[in-house]
Image (tube, rainbow, N blue to C red; front, side):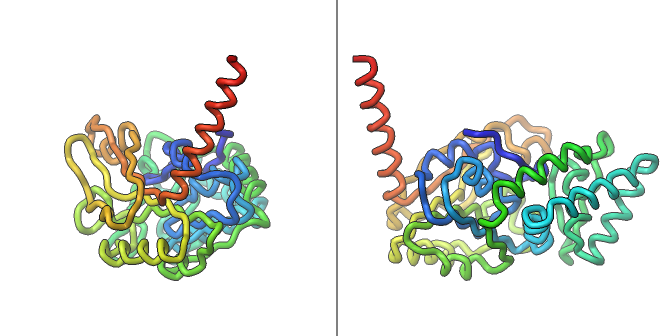
Amino acid sequence: MSSVPHLVQYQGSKRNLAAKILDYIPTKCNRIIEPFAGTAAITMACAVNHLADKYIINDLNKPLVGLLELVVNNPSYVARKYGEIWNEQIDRSVEHYYEIREKFNKTQDPVLFLYLLARCVKGSVRYNSEGMFNQSPDKRRKGTAPQKMENNIFSISYILKGKTEFYSNDYKILLKKALPGDIVYMDPPYQGVCGDRDSRYFAGINHNEFVEELNKLNKRGISFIVSYDGKLGEKSYGKEIPKEIGLEHVFLNAGRSSQATLLGKSDLTIESLYITKDLVNVVEKIKKENRSELFERVS
């Protein structure tokens, strides 16, 4: 897979699993739709590899979606403002971080958010009960240097500009936009490992309602992939998607999780991937064709 640009090390991002997930996305589809996009790692991986004509990015976190939209459509502005903010921290980085955090919580400015994401502890986003960003700075580093950030910003803009729609809606609204020929990738926040209230997200989703939405997609003939339940070490998290939905269930080794790292553990994360049968069949067909070509060359 081609090298994929990224803005920040974002906890919960599927960037490290993107190559394995893309194995189930054939070329070429109409649109890639991410209703729970986060930093849109899967969208970016698909765009780098030219897997779709158009992309839809959605997340309830409005400043995050606003940041991605600015990066794609106005990269010069984001790179310049980020550089200004970053350079202001040199002599008083910790105090500067808290000042920027206070400004962000008042204004929701997406570029301030970019600095906080690049500078906070282990890329681990946290919100308090009032929805205010409250993560602390990583005192060992000052965040991504402006030149490196600028390179990433312009790379992201290059692969997505003119091809991408941005929304901050309930996921159910986004699913209604899906059409046959699209592929929906979903990584909902419900199945976290932080208990009933996960401070990484503004809100979870209801399991039964989510399963019903998957049923609706199936009836409409929409292809989709879902990252959902999984294991951290020997402990399982989250409910499985019922077998009656008729999805292929595969397991991906995600390595040592960021959550385990934060807790000082070495447990491996095994993530579940649920895939509509049509995508599995397409991938199997491609593998058979590749094996046949290899056999012919060897013969």
